[in-house]
Each structure stands twice: as C-alpha cells, then as structure tokens.
Amino acid sequence: MTDFTYVENVAYAHICAEKALSSRGSHVCGKAFFITNLKPMKFKDFVSLVFQRLGYQRSIIKIPAMVTQYITLIIKWIISRMSNWSTENVPVFDIIELALCHRRFNCSAAQKYIGYSPVVSLEEGVAVTAKSSHLTRESSFSSYSDTDEESKVHKLLGGGKVAEILLWRDEQRTFTCFLLLVFIHYWFFLSGRSFLSSLSQLLLMIAVALWGYSILPPTIYGISVPRISWSFFEISEVDMRNCFYNVAYMWNRVSHLARLLSQGEDWHIFLKAAIPLYVLKLVISDCLAFALGIALALAFTSFLIYEQYEDEIDSTANVIFSISKVAFTLLMRRLPLPPALLHSDSEIRSSRLNIQ
Image (cartoon, rainbow, N blue to C red; front, side, top):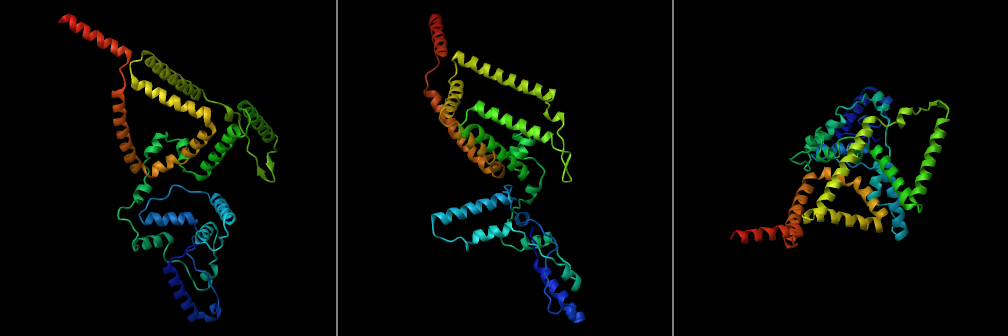
C-alpha cells in the first residue's frame, strides 16, 4: 500500500498551518507533519486509474509482486555475472523497487494540530490532472474497459471457470493453476520416469496427503481446520452423461471422416486429415515434452493477448486466411482427380458417344 497526495491538498495544508501558527503558534511551531490524501492504495491500482483517466485501456496482465521481485533479482544477478556493470543506480530497478514497497505515512498529527483534511479526493485529483494532460486520447477506452459485455474470446472459452482462469480475471487463482500445471508437466514428462511410475507415485502422494489431512485435529492453535465432505469426490450423473455424450459425438465424427476417406473422392478431406496426423506424429515422436510446454505457455498468454488486440489480430488473420485459401485452391487444381471421379467421367463420355 502506498500513500499519494494531490498538490491542491498540499497547498491547503500550508493554509491550515498558517492559520494554526497565527492562532496557537507555540503548539505547532517547529513541528513536521505528513500530508497525504488519507487513502492509501496499491501502486498498480493507482497506475491503472491514471491510465483509465487518460483514455487508455486498463492493462489486464497483472504480474504478482512476488514474481516481479524474483524476476528483478534474477536479472540483477545475471547482469552482475556477465559484466562488471553495477545495478545499484539503474533507474528501472529503482522504479520497480519503489512500486513494490509499502510507503504509508501517519497524518494524525496534521489532523490534530492544524486541522488538516483533504479537500480533493484521489479519484478527483487524477481526473483533473488527466484533463489537463496532453497525453489524453480523444477516443477514450474507459467505457470499453468498464462495460460488462463479454469479449469474443471469453465466449469462445465458454464463459465459465476455464475462461476466468485463462483470461487472468483472478491473478492469484490463475497463477496457482499455472504452477500446478507446470508441476504436472515436469512430473510426467521431465522427471525421467515412465508414465506409469510417475502416475503411481503421484497417486501415492495424494493418498498420503489425504490421510494426513484426515487425522488433523479440528483446531490447530485456535485455527479451525475445514473438513472435506464425501460429496467433494463424487461425480454427478449429469456430468458423466455429458462426458459420454461428448465421447460418442467425437467417435461418430471420426467414423464419418474415416468413411469419407475410404471412398477416396475428395482431396480436400484427405489433406485435412493427413497434414494434422503427420504433424502429430512428428510432435509425439520427437518433441512431445517441448510441445506440451509451449502449448501450456501459449494457453496462459495467447487468449489474453487476443482479448487485448482483438481487432488487429482479426484483420491480420483474415489476410492470412485469404492468401492461404487462394494458395490451397491453386494446389487443388494441380492435383489429379480421384480414381472414382475419373471412372465416372469416362462413363459419361462413353454414354455421350453412344447417344451420338
């Protein structure tokens, strides 16, 4: 938490001090007072408020303070190892440390002895400052950032818990899920054990943790320990039915695609099936762990980036799709016709000759 002060409140504090000196100078003469807006807030919230008042979209990416601090320490360590350059007086690092630290001041003495109280709130001060700034954008995005309308990617992800996690609506929850998935990825693919061995050890750890949690006393040092109900481990009949419906739907789709491929009448369907299968074969045989790591990183970044730059990405994707469609059409024209179509075409020609 950090205290901020609007300049008009500082001027008003000087007026209050002058009045106090003229009326009861012996009580306040020579004393120092802290002057703030009496409303501490997080540094990132203050920066977001300033950006919103300037007409810019609020940043959705919010890195936890602890992670930022660790990243800064790692960068400092790398710089110190790779060169003799000192990082003590680098302005960027000073700004990061200032943003991460807590700076609060006690203004009770100013309230008591000179009768100070802020005349301009923090939100009003930021709004007045933004209006007089030359950085204010003409087309404000503040109405966009405050709207309750769901974005396209939020609807694409189903608008549920998965969308909330992948779009970083709750930073702590998303970061916890990300660390959990990173641990699972390391446990199964980077630990050097087989899949069955990793699975058995993970299940053993979960069983031991549940058993240890079950024998805990109801309270530990005055802190109540919540119990896990049996319903937590149950799967509802509706969820199981939906799961089997989805499996059956996917099976029917695959069987329909296999039936079309067996007929050999469409190069388009063949390429749509062959190219992804070939890429999947290369990924599984050569770099499965690396590909899953890249997919994990993209899942927690790509959707968020798309939500922020939706129009730019859509326009670029439309251009790429149009070029790809033209190239695919030219490729299809150069491919030979399937045997079934050649046979039917020869039959049509022979029937025409018989008619003539």
